[in-house]
Amino acid sequence: MKQVTILCVGLLLVGSHVGSEAWIRTAAAACPEFLSGQSLGTLELSSINEASGLAGSRANSGVLWMHNDSGDSARVFATELDGDHLGIYYLSGTGATDWEDMAIGPGPVAGQSYLYLGDIGDNNAVRSSIQVYRVAEPAVSPGQTPVTTTLYGVETFTLEYPDGPRDAETLLVDPLNGDLYVISKRTSYSRVYRAAYPQSTSGTITMEFKGELPWGWATGGDVAPMGDEIIIRGYSNASLWRRPPGTDLRRIALQHSVGQ
Image: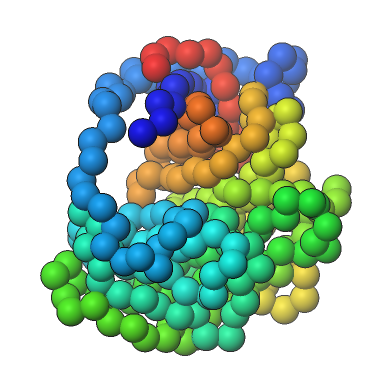
């Protein structure tokens, strides 16, 4: 298992990258204790051969969702925490150019959790637009007989960057308000873009550029279910931001390392 350095940080981003005068310091919350990684098992299904996106279910305790990288069809897999196979779920009416990340968050029906699938990969930065798919999270039970089925009612968000095509592997959804974030990869400072909720399913949404991380080449991330912590990782590092109550998710940035 590759070792990743995790920095616990706590500053609100109001400008661009580290060093900007627009940065303001806040009191850093106590950094949580990070333990060594622990193997829980091995993926049972051989079809998961290049797992890229991963999300812990919000509706089904003990269930993980994941999908493959580019080259697979438009489908997600459900597994138990130890990797035991629970199901393959195809998304009706969608494509799979280069799925890179997924998230779980709110949507149009109160109390319903939704899967967000990010078709956001673009190694050569040539795609005029990218897609994010949203579908209600289905019921899955640990220990169930594995199923193969299709999910209907999938919504498609077509997104474009305000400053030209970019490669991205990080998709975040704010659990407090449904805002969607895409974070670029192949830059010295990864760039943060937002599509505010409610996202339109007609036409193309031009995302808003909201700032830069203090480092580049972001490869994945997630937001805690309560919305109070955000973690984003690179190839050999990760940063955890503490989110003070009442602040926007876009105001994440680096203050200083208070633990690793």
